[in-house]
Image (cartoon, rainbow, N blue to C red; front, side, top):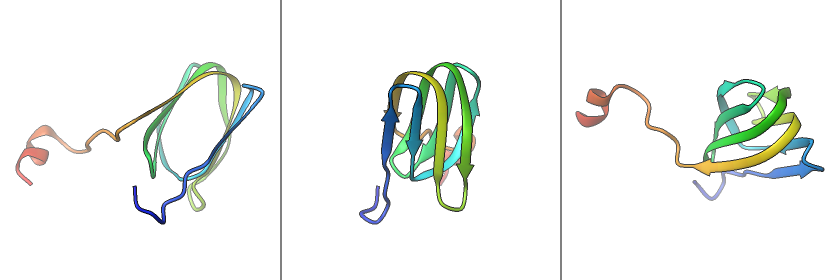
Length: 87
């Protein structure tokens, strides 16, 4: 993560989460939302989850529902296995 890349996370009463520094939403359903951001991959787990706001321009995202976990991991490599091997 570069020094200029900012990421914030605010959880309100485990019912609303506001994130900044989001680049893309990889997948989402009512139980898991997976996004990539300036800090890697972020998975939000819970129930009745929904993305109530998303701005690709600013990197802001708001998720509402029952939030049970927020998990950070390294971003998964993109492209096929062979394209990654022969860089």
